[in-house]
Length: 303
Image (cartoon, one colour):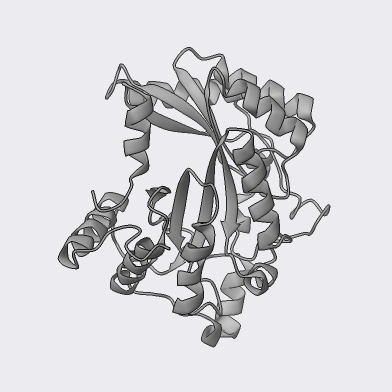
């Protein structure tokens, strides 16, 4: 492999195949409920936030059972991670959070949890809980960084700066916990130089894994309105452009940071652009092929 694949890391820790089960636990976000802001980040799909999402009908355990039943016929012996994905999954009272996480861990096939959150929504007390849990279960905390550029973070209404993300990731790692990060490539007003600088900045962080994805314009978002009014702020890359960018990004990325994802695909009913017509595995194949064509690899220019 010419880059460190996250699955390679998992295979070193588990003899069985691992599958994530996405869980919606009914959380909200401080950037939506008014404690920090309203309306959420400008790229968020407001149409997806309906009452059934805000207060799920099914319990965490029920969602896990359904998810495991779906995958079980393919890989009967595999284990699962409960992936708390929707909204900000550390945004509640400590006792409520622990109850939700423990409910997921009751299932005998759940080997751990992955918790998606914002860097401004983590506490020392919660990190202490995760550190204790990490002694018996797999625990990863995923932070939405999205950009290392403060002017971009302000423009997309994140309501935190990059220093906040750095602090949260270092504190999490200091507790012996695995840390993940999300970045969006192609945000408004970010040129290639800025996007490649993200790789150099996050390479200094104690990250376990990284998820990349391309900017997508989603119906019903503030960003979609901005695109209609000021298209000059945006450059929606072709698949070929994005592949070249990702290759250069990988060349600058710390080779110890595992890559979990290169792209994301929103449902067709919400997606405005870009629509590349490629499945995730097809895109990964193209990345791998391009790395081989150029005889290059992750971390080639790191440091």
